[in-house]
Length: 291
View 1 (tube, one colour):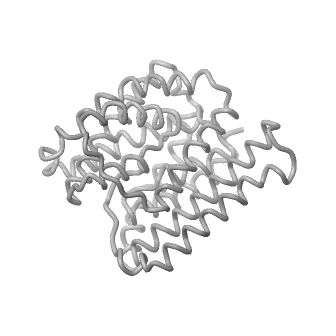
View 2: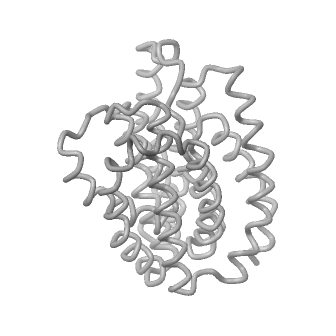
């Protein structure tokens, strides 16, 4: 049955690849909420993780000259990833698909809204914070294949230069995708059905990423990022409403109250964004990897 959704997955990943090419991140955070409307985490996650191992390795290689400056700072996060990935993989293998979708949407929604709100707060005890933060990111990534939002907020708020930011994020993302791929192999999650999704995803990346890089040179980067974030929030709100309805936690129109609340909150944040002039005052955003 999953084969019938290959065209939809190709379209979704193409759009997500354009966003990623434009902003440097956002591939998984757009792909996952939409794809989970018709696929399960157990089927989708392995395909995305496998692709991201190679993609993250490439981006780290491109930014390798800045790695020496940040490696010691992000090493605690990498160490913390290990137990987090193990726990997250156990969750994927043990939790029912519908409940796993619910958890995914519930975790993603506040992360997206926090980004939309423009959270800015540096962590002083960076090394001590890195271990538990890495564990949390490991759980999040292995369950959802998304880690860009918390990593981008944390690393950006630590005052890293653009190249250092990209190298640090690349190092962490390569570690988490590699650890997760190893854990998925041990858990037997790489199935024929899951691997069959990759042919729909790889061409989307090959075409969409350079197209996004071309597009962002012709539009305001911060406005583009913020509009994509609103779209992401609405998709997550819709997905959350759908899964709440399918689990019987709410019936009929009542289930879509969740989406309505998300749209209202995001509309307020979007109004603040344009009213305060962020679209014109912030002309660039840090590059990162697919979230």
